[in-house]
Image (cartoon, rainbow, N blue to C red; front, side):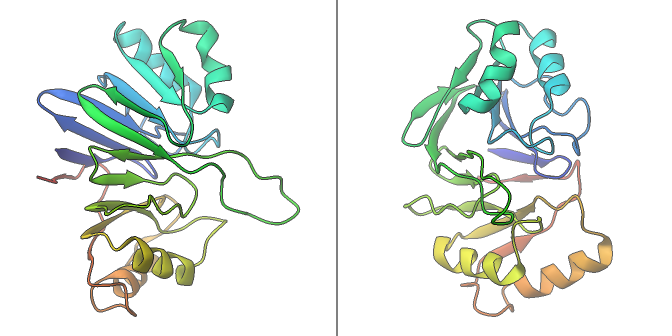
Amino acid sequence: MKLTKRGHACVRLEKDGRALVIDPGGFTEPDAAVGAEAILVTHEHPDHFNEQQLRAALEADPAAEIWTLKSVADQVSAAFPGRVHTVGEGDTFSAAGFDVEVHGQMHAVIHPDIPRITNVGFLVDGSLFHPGDALTVPGRSVETLLLPVHAPWNKVSEVIDYLREVKPARAIDVHDGLLNDLARTMYDRLLGPDGPGVGGAEHDRMASGDSTDLG
């Protein structure tokens, strides 16, 4: 599996000549989802869900499909009948040759006065987990964790504890669109193998467009 980091919370996964994209949103390049057979969306916030990007991808490839929760599906399914699939916690499906499990139900708390929305995470091929905007623990071992490092709803102590609990072999930063380069060096130190008890996970910070082979 090859992973390519795209802007903010978005990644592109490729295997056997097929592609799957997770969370192309408003902080992501406009063409991030174009060329993917499958698109997964964790929730409706605009930094994860951009309707124009989804439309561009589905119009470019008549076989492309979307898997997402109801709040997103309701906004795009009418335009693409039969190509938008609603999923929730516990569901499993295959998309573009990848096996996907759905974990989680709710977005993390931003503030007690702000109503919570739904959010799901996606475990791909039993090895890579994208939690969306939550610190969901998938309940099984994870080789690669896409780690939301910076958001209005988290703080670094919670991110460290999340790494400790999931215990991935490798953590790759996502949800990093609001961090400048100075902040990223601090996160590298705190979340890397020499950080305060993160379990020795290899920590990677990738620029948009960078790729890595996950094996």
